[in-house]
Image 1: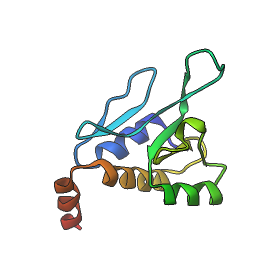
Image 2: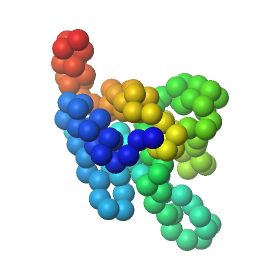
Image 3: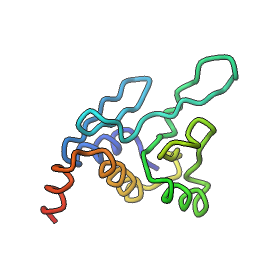
Image 4: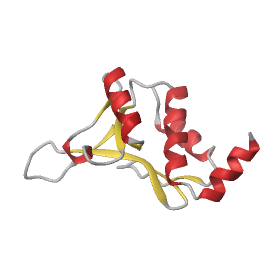
Amino acid sequence: MVDRETLRRLVEALPSGHDASTERALTYLVAGKGLAWTWNERVHPKKPRVPRLDVLAVRCSFERREMLLDTAPDRFFIDDHYRGYAGVLVRLDAIDEDEMAGMLEAAWRMVAPKALVKARDLEG
């Protein structure tokens, strides 16, 4: 299980990683770009979506998403809103810290400025 404090620590360990979360929504950024955020569930078709703090939307490639959906449907899923988007929905109570760290690192690499990625790679 991964909680808010763990997410904050993992994101802030990434170069320029920033926790912009509020009481009602988790939001994690790098250089002003989102790498993960709260999933807003469509509970009623004609009403606003409802934030689900137990599910995090995380950027990832379509290829990785398909692999995650096939191999671990207990941890990962998508809804119609995310079908055409390079991201996956993660059940925070079903994922461990190491796997979440890997997901956030991959998301960071997708959106971080190239200079930051290069500097991190040079660090080893």
